Length: 127
Figure 1 (tube, rainbow, N blue to C red):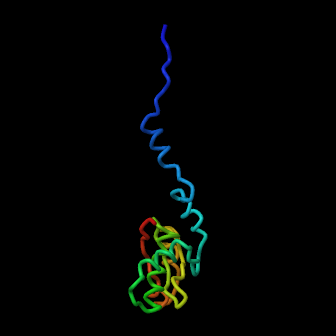
Figure 2: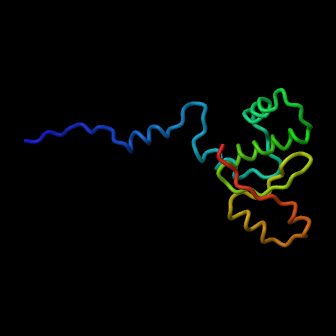
Figure 3: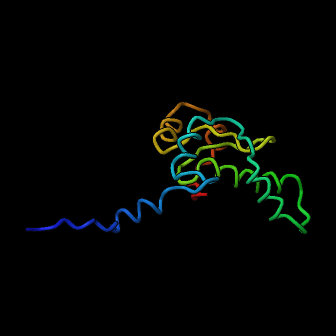
């Protein structure tokens, strides 16, 4: 007669448990799925505003320099792990396309040389 042993959680189960987000965090992919619909000027979330304030503390910078730093962190926060096409404007980075497919479609469109040269395409490091 054989007895069944209770299964110990294996590595796969432990890894799956470790990937579950804790309260107050965003699961991987959740932010990017939510952000795929964002276009135009981006809202600055409180986390980005706090990070910019902390980075610039004690460093005199111009408004333009502060805006560029904020834009970089905003793009990384909203689109980390994606390709993004955007233009720099006085109000901040203006998002035109997100993801390699959409960026490719944008760049194949007919536009003037000046319009094409104003587009910046970057891979955003994960937040």
